[in-house]
Length: 261
Image: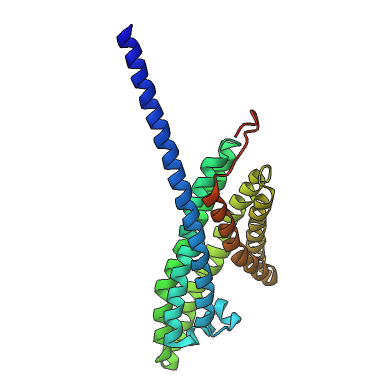
């Protein structure tokens, strides 16, 4: 009996240590996700600034590869850094936050939460891949265009158009935005119960992505450009709000059945 009681106490102590370790790991991951989200805001802002500097604040040149080709050697360097900042600011650094939301929201509806999280992870992967392609492919084209003769420029211009159509229209504005719309709208609906403002902002991100994708499909450029502009400004603000909130405390989510957090 004594040995049995001692063994039970030892097992209870082990379980307690494991539970404490798990809670410590959860707190560390939450803070990591929050810090990464806050950091992403500054990198996203740097992306927008260096992009505009690269094209001398000519907004048409941002989406027009022929105008971008004329930005010169200085523009090529700025464009490369812009895409690297985009890679981290809008995509890679929000991955921990997506995983945190998945772990937190799964108590409400695990299958729907998994779907939303996987869609957002797909968005991050596709978006990051597109940014990496443009970071490595576009600057050499710009530099080659500077000293190219007219016949060489006739070759470079269709090539630049091809890269832009592949990344901007196919990867970013269509495929990635459809995944993002599904994920953000789903997370927004799940968050609105306990966190109304955050849920509404998340839902708005999804709507902007959806409008951008639909505008791309039907070639409604005004709708697409407007929705994308809203998303580019709202996404860093969302990351900042969620990141600062998680630095203070974890998100409290109630289950539909028990009502407990």
